[in-house]
Length: 338
Ligand code: SAH
Image 1: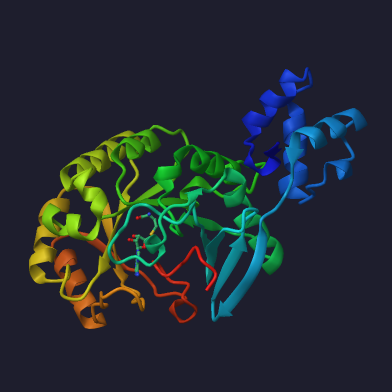
Image 2: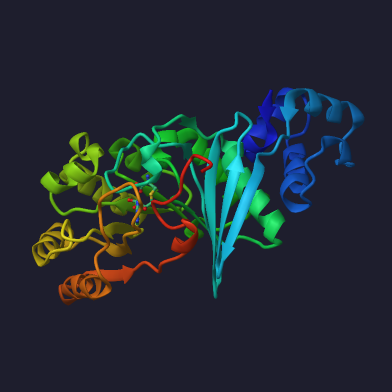
């Protein structure tokens, strides 16, 4: 049996036409699920009894469960329990302009980045589409809010779970789904080149962020094992291709690690690498974890690094620090309930 929250509207249209039904039934079901928030087929009063029975026999509408959620200032962290007792987390950040949510895409992660807490648990499995959709539905239901933007930057490498990710993005972007504008949706990748190129060809205007974190292969391979598969050069070529196909600027994420990648020399190498490209750099203050030896670069040095880039015409933003007191910050999410 499949979960109804894994189905995009086109998939559901196919389902209905295969049954000899009109395809607009898919829109009706979507209105129940995402507008009226009714997931029991028996309550979908504009569907015939026989059709309801058929939906009930073909689809499950099980939801993942909120195990707990914590709150600190403008940040909430949700721990979800999946049907097989795996755990994932999502983080909600309230800004003046709306609410953004950072969702997980996998249980664990295989990318093995040296500085990341989330990756200490190897990948157990992909999240199904419905498990990604339901993170958002449950957050909206619990906090009685509407989510205005989504970043796929929680646990997992989204492009390592590509098909489920794209169905998730399609559903949340659908005007009859969660209707979150594509420009308010960002996927962050450690640099899986073939998927960057596939993503570039999608008709929807989703944003892309690349976790670069080092300006040369030697250092990047030490921090991010994926660099041994796709070198900086290959990733930058993919970013160029993405830009030429989409005309959308890519965000380059650069986590500031004390005495590792934060020297002036690194800044100048980064400038050389990014010169003339239509990207902007997001400097990420490192969130220290108990298990890993990396330390955060102090604020003054982050500003100094940023200024060198700016003086060389590279647009820089410094990521606001959210939620570190409840371990809800970047790289602190875990797939274990501890
Ligand atoms: N796998 C994807 C998305 C998940 S991580 C990716 O690699 O992009 C989201 C961002 O947080 C990445 O840029 C990641 O490198 C960064 N990050 C990981 N651990 C961190 C930490 N402890 N402090 C700050 N940022 C961290």
